[in-house]
Amino acid sequence: NDDGTFHAETEDDPVDARAVIFAGGAKPRPLAVEREQELTGQGVSYCALCDGAFFAEQDVAVIGGGNTAFSDALVLAETSKSVTIVHRRSGFRAEATQIAAVEQAENIRLMIPYTVAGLEGEDHLEGLVLRHAETGELCTWEACQTFSGSWGYHRDEQTWKSPEMLIRMLINT
Image (cartoon, rainbow, N blue to C red; front, side, top):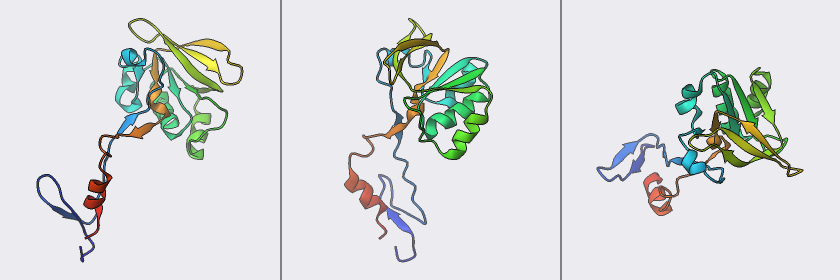
């Protein structure tokens, strides 16, 4: 609009606003290991803020090396007995401030370079099978809870199916 506002057409009524925030949605990026879906909610979780309190005073694992993983590890470290960050390489994509905070936390340790090769447990998660990224050697890590969503999110493709509609909504008219 001429007054510096945006005009958006919605299903109900048109809206004029000084700012538009599009919350397109995101879904956790799965580990893609066998039995992940059936153990989700039974020890495999994707939200440290949502589910972390259920696992106070327990050992937890966070998978990943980016901002989401490091942020989740820091949140979980406040109530968990210990937090182990499992990451596939020695370098991290997390911001330097988060890396420094993790390094200072007494109950967070790093397990690198490892990837998750499998999940153990029948009715609930009892442990992780980890693969050394360089040697291929397998080992087991016992965890009560794994925050596998911590290695990031991807956009909700259903929301983004019509880019023309999104562009039309956000055009400054």
